[in-house]
Image 1: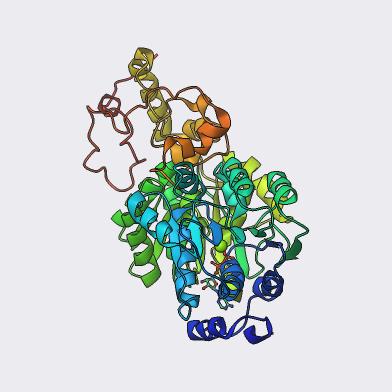
Image 2 (image 1 turned 135 degrees about the horizontal axis):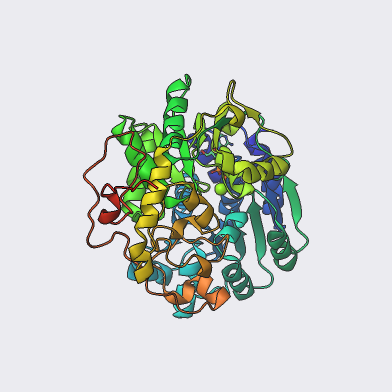
Length: 506
Ligand code: ADP
Ligand code: MG
């Protein structure tokens, strides 16, 4: 079905033609007529299926009637991260080039004053991350009582990031009669609850079974020893052996590993950039640009940092870590095999990943093949070197006893210890207070938002966090650089732990 049979306005159709789109994607073809008919829509479709245009195009058409008033936006789009919000804005600019609409972005990391000035002028489309939005509302700078259309995008990611209470609040602040468009790749129970509470008789559209993975993706498992250096070596072998590699995203479970893997690949001469929650907005955008233009053909990222980013035509996904949350697997490999293109997704699996792997296979409803010749059973035993490391750490217990900060392990033990920590929090508070951290709650979208906007605090009323340990001990500078294939990243260890230790026999 061509775009011009969906009921879109001429202005929109002409912009779509200029963008080079010839046919709507299935979710677009199904959703657009209902959005234009002012129905609530629940859109379930995996990443990369074109959900953004499924709501931006009909919204532009609907917005041609009427005008915005100061501080009272007409439509509101909620996105879990700044990058996604910025991408949606780009979509409005691209498809709205024949319109004279005011589009404003309310995201962390951008000056409050500039955003406020825009709101005062009146906006037709407000794109926001939940925390920053509520900041503006709480300061009385923004009224949500004029909202005609509310879009909740990437709802499952909102859930992961702890934004559900914020979303509930926003839903109660917008008029009861608004139209709601709700998009998600997966449909966990919490999301289901939100939908039944805040959508009114929605049309449900499924572009493909939720949590299924695109059939154009070749998925393969690769066995590896569990030590970091072994995994990095496995990764390099995979990259080098990938004949049709045009560009690839390498996913790590933890932010710390993003930095380590990035550095390591750089040292090995790969053209690689990284994306994680600690980077400021500018460096993130720079990294993304380098990846989009092909200046770098590899991107190392954490789940939160990469969720939903519009990076077309990724040929390969490498899961440096088997994801702990099965749904992350679906999102990660959704970065490839887009728009019918073939893609390859490799997942590095160590002997301690069997539970995570089982959960993934259960979610996607099938077993994933092992790469030819690869198997956990035939793995060579880990080198004794790692055991030495463990001993060394035991001897470094002095710090621990002083209660300063436990030495972080560089062996598999750490993996177990931090498995359930929110990935983005790991570096900021190294191993200091694992017990205080809720599972499955991450936050990197809006580091600069006010305290009241912190979903974790709102929801949990957690006791005040203990003082955070510094990222790097003051006495220790990042070592100038160990040879490339050392068992690795030692930068997190206090210097005395790195001194050779004589172990007495017996
Ligand atoms: P989702 O939100 O479902 O993850 P996006 O809206 O980000 O997906 O779109 C994914 C990619 O598909 C983007 O690069 C977008 O430009 C492209 N795209 C969207 N609609 C079409 C279309 N009708 N034809 C071709 N490409 C499209
Ligand atoms: Mg999207």
